[in-house]
Structures are given as C-alpha cells and as structure tokens.
Length: 198
Image 1 (cartoon, rainbow, N blue to C red):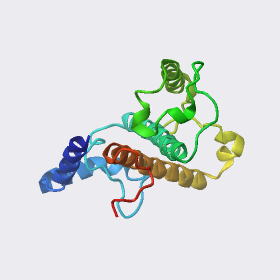
Image 2 (image 1 turned 180 degrees about the vertical axis):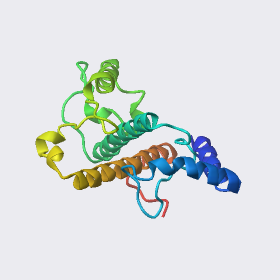
Image 3 (image 1 turned 90 degrees about the vertical axis):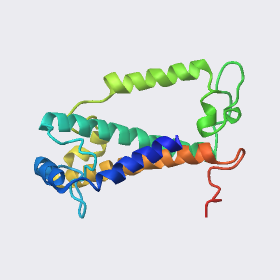
Image 4 (image 1 turned 120 degrees about the horizontal axis):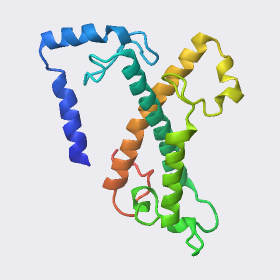
C-alpha cells in the first residue's frame, strides 16, 4: 500500500518538471473548465495529471459526477471509521450471536464480517450505484436535500454549497486513505486516536 502511494506521489511530483511547451499546450485545452463548480483561488482549475485534457463537456461532467459520488462515499467512510472507534451498537450482528463488539475496527473487520453482512453491503452498493442516485447533470442525486430546501437556494448559494461539497469530498478521500494507512501501520491493539507520530 505504501509503495503504491509513494509511486503515485512520485508521478505527481515528476509532472511538475515537464517541458514548458507541454504545459502551455495543456493549459490552453483546460481553459474551458476554468469556470466550473469546485474551482477555487489561488489554484484555479487544478488538474496536475491532465485527466481533463482534450475532453468534451459531457466527459468532464461524467468525471465530475464520479468525483462527487466518490467524495460522498469517502465522507461516509471517514465518519463511519471514527464512529466505530468511539462506540458500538449493543446486541448481535448475526443469528449465531456474534456481537458488534467482536468485530474489530477498520481493516481488521474485513475477514471477520459474516457472509450475510457482506451480502447486505454488496446489495446496498448495487442499489446506490444502479438505482439510488437521481441523475441531474454533473451533480447526481439530491440525497433528500430537496426536503431541506436545497433546491430553493439562489444559484450563487447552490454553487457555493456544491463547491463546498466537492472540497469536503476531496478532503475526505485523502482522509480515508490516511485512516487506512494509519490502521495498517499502527501497532496491534493501538487505538485509532493514538498520536504516537508526534
């Protein structure tokens, strides 16, 4: 896991030293996305790997929808990771009497979750992937926010809220990777909240 992260970081770092002609050419192609939701000063439209280079608006919207969906999943994952470290449900997780406390936190739970639990997880993912999101352009699914009046906001406030959701999702994607890395690298029996790195 660490090697994969180090390789990705090296590739991103190496892209900073690419030739000037390549940078100017790709910057010209990126200009059409400079006013998209999620673009913030001082970085502006930031695409160090050039994933949007040469893409049309429809493809960009598909990428943005995927980014939004992954950000929402990551926000839920970070929240779940922290909540499971703080407390557990009472009772049993299956009909055999396995208690919630018997399932370890984080990565350790992967091999211990009963098969019926994995069936529920896969069914839930399938539902949300195939049926659950209501497609509306690059921001699919309101996830019940319409009931809270989200759709009644002015266009400026909707843009601000969508930018915040994208930024929080981006941060959560980094956060869940850090939590997984910490969980794998920490000594056995150590709490998620141990600050031995400082």
